Amino acid sequence: MKPTTIKNQIASEKKLITKAAGIVGFWTSVSRISGFIRDMIIAIFLGAGTGADAFFVAFRIPNLLRRLFAEGALSAAFVPTFIDTMHRSGRDEGVRLARIAVTFAALVLLVVTFMGIVFTPQVVRVTAPGFFSDHEKFNLTVELTRIMFPYIFFISLVALVSGVLNSLGRFAAPAAAPILLNLSMIAGVLALTRWIDWTPYQSLAWAVTAAGVFQLCLQIPFLVSEGITLKPDFHFGYPPLKRMGRLFVPAAIGGAVYQINVLVGTVLASTLPSGSVSWLYYADRLVQLPLGVFAIALGSAALPSMSRLASTGDYKGLGESVSFSLRLIAFFTIPASVALIILRGPIIGVLFQHGRFTQLDTAETAYALLWYTAGLWAFSGLKVVTQAFFSLKDTKTPLWISLVAVIMNLVAGLILMNPMRHGGLALATTIAAAFNFVLLFVILIKRIKWFEVSEFLVSIGKISAGSIIMGAFLVFIKDFGLWSHGLTGKNFLILGISILAGMAVFGVSAYLFRCEQIKSIRSVLKI
Image (tube, rainbow, N blue to C red; front, side):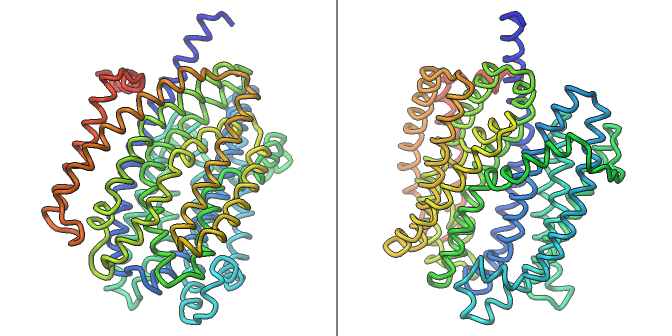
């Protein structure tokens, strides 16, 4: 291939990644905003006490399995195999793989769901050992987990179908699907509690399961518009399915290491004073905003592009995509980290400090958020680097390094939880993620043998300088609020002005520093 052709292809892939990330990022933003409304309502009804701890542990279990079986493994194993099959054998064979994969996954997931419901008490004892001494809390957690376990069946099928749509350049429906979860949970806690004789915890749990059905139904019309119907196909000896299967197990653990580490924190937090699990949950939800909108969105958008480049053996193009994706993520996550650290108290107070969520809960959640946010760069970078390994059909390297990171997280958590309580558990997750990212990044660069270090460092330097200027502005303006009062009209107004003005200050600074990401975003928006 001629150098000019290669250069044009790389430029085209960069534009595709940016455009796809913009689509996914937009719908993810809507999802996260609706998620915050959901969490605000949950905070009012549940607060951060015993019942809330039980619900969040119960919700964490199907959520972890969603990461393991759905986003963490099925997508990572399916998308590169699907694209490679279409590249080598044509679209019809790719569609055949999708049908067989959905059929096989549905059968396996039925077994997993059934076993999960039967052995829920044992699962809860492992994931929240500190609850066993409190029979009321333990029994409530078991009940809620059983109600929500079918969610994993539906959401895993959503992940497979989303992988098909993403590979065909359709990103909107898969990215919009989580909005239905938030709307379902909001409706559950507000409506079902009144119409049916259920507690808020039971209403939320049933709403989660119902959301899985809604999310799957949303994808079907878009599949049909692509001429694809996923009728059952039981040819499980199909070679591409076997190749996908070899990628699945290591991808399940390697792709979900962040959720595993958060679960480790939840397990340890269950032995701390009541409320610790909830404080970690609310802090994690805030970190998930930039992580979901930018990192996960960009990782989902970049995987098909990286898979195309890897399938053709274009490692230079793959290296360009990795570098570009990391720089684009840094453009959003570095200023987001600075803003979260400075405004963590005001944000939590305005969002959650109502009803049963007290000023103490705000302070303790902010304490956890500080240490989670310190690792946002690593959480975000991991999504891109891990996807690059998946595009190379290498799921074993992320697996082994992730296992070491999980052990590191456990050891660091045990050491730090006594002097720092739940904040130490958040810091342990950050330390493990930093180790995971740095080691995977070094191995990846050695493998593809291309990465423009100087260009990367210059870009990070410009972004950091703009973020520092924005941070100085936020430190000044936040002093105008009375944040101990939680949500008031004045606090809401000042927080809104602070966020919008901070974004403007960073945007102007990035423009003056000539950050390349401004040009990329403008080219996609055509402004």
